[in-house]
Length: 423
Image (tube, rainbow, N blue to C red; front, side):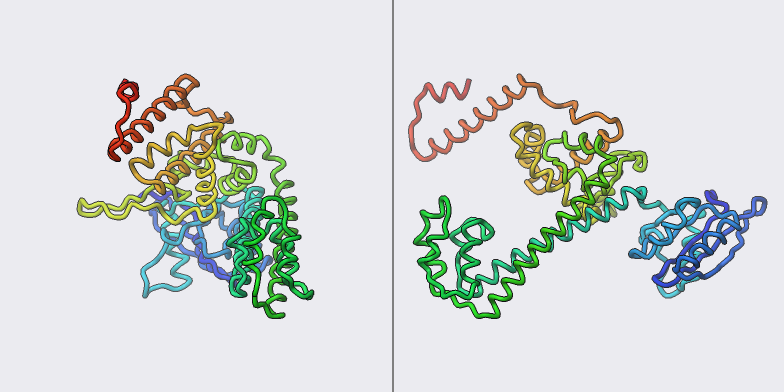
């Protein structure tokens, strides 16, 4: 096999130390010599590791992506050394015959022959933005969990207020809840005076929902704690939004491009940009990008039989963002481009697969837009005349289906109406 990196280093990274093996291939005999050394993960020791690499003229390093332990090493090496971060499935060794030294040597051997595909690591600015957007995602999920606990707290206290109001966090519902968890004597009829807008028409149902509730002092205190936590999360989300706005200032033009896609708003565009960056040369094609995001069916065949072709688990943060954008895109009234494609795929493959297909189309559009710098303008987008014909055809098909249902029910329709549908 061809030797791609004559001088390279394989690194087995752990929390408190790393084991490195420099492999030097002699040009004439093609035999390899090995230098093994162990370093701690403190900054001074990592700088010594970097100096050791440069002294041995080693400019190519490969290490396994074990948790977050590879990041401090990568941060100190990236300015002077080409570092490849490998997915563990590409560099795993045979169980029963492994240790730290053997692992680093095995990683180096595979890397020397060019058998280790590198993982995508964006530049530092994008990595900082990614840290903030992912943390914001966690806080939003935490707030959603608190909202669920908030509603469950009333359910266990025999309060069915959520069955009457559309939201437990509206103006009227919040006023009623504050009155219920206060220390004042409870009067169900007083809740009627706290209603606003259309909820006044449901005053009787509101009284029935809250009358006779059973809430102890400890349960009231728990609800107050949940309210305080949600308010604190709102403040923290606002603070992280300010940091995100500062980090996205250099990428305003890229965000404007992405926002031209139906279903993609600024927050969605920021999340997409933080995951894939702005340099599309890191990905060979849009298909590679979609595969990296976990939106491409798997290829699993053996003995002429096709097994599971489900999408992979990749793209833990990017995939949900694109799925959410796809749901918004197919409902966008201003541009029914994705809506028409969704209907065609859903009729053949089902709604869930159709949404994944739309998410993949959006990511493909993102790839080409960031690569070319052009706004959203697909080549197969229909003009106004074609859209009018398509809408008329859909309307006529709906009328035909309705006419069939009416005739099955035994109702006779006028002949002129049936002739207009056939024409």
